[in-house]
Image (cartoon, rainbow, N blue to C red; front, side, top):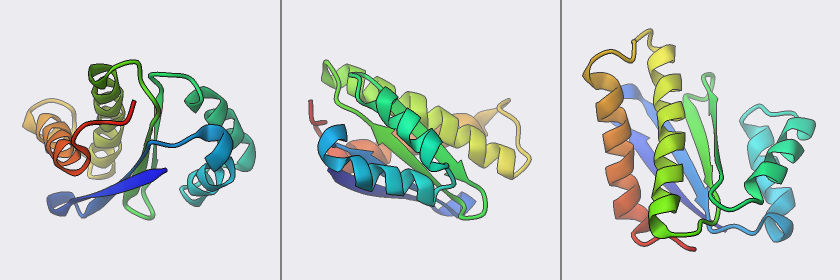
Length: 129
C-alpha cells in the first residue's frame, strides 16, 4: 500500500491518497484509515467490499480535520486509474467548496480538481495496475 499527500494551501485542506493496496492483505489498515475519517466499522467494511473491485475508488471528507482521504483501487488501464482518481477528486472538491460556502458555478471547482490532478500526476507518475 502506498500513500501520497496533497496540500491545498489556499483552502487549508489536506488530501491523503491511498493506492496500490491489496484489500485482503491491507484490510485492517484500510479499515482503520476510513474509521479515522469518521466512518463506522460497518460502513468501512462495506466500503472495502466495493474497493476490492477493479476501477473503484472512494473519497471520505472530514470537515473537522479539514482533510479528505481518497482510495484508488487497481484498474484495468492507466486511463481508468486516473479517471477513478479524478472522479473522487470531484467529491473532494465538492466537500471543500461546501465547507467554505462556495458553489460549483465558476472557476473554483475546476481549479481545485485541476490542482489535485496535477499534484497526483507529479506524485504518483505511472499508476500501479
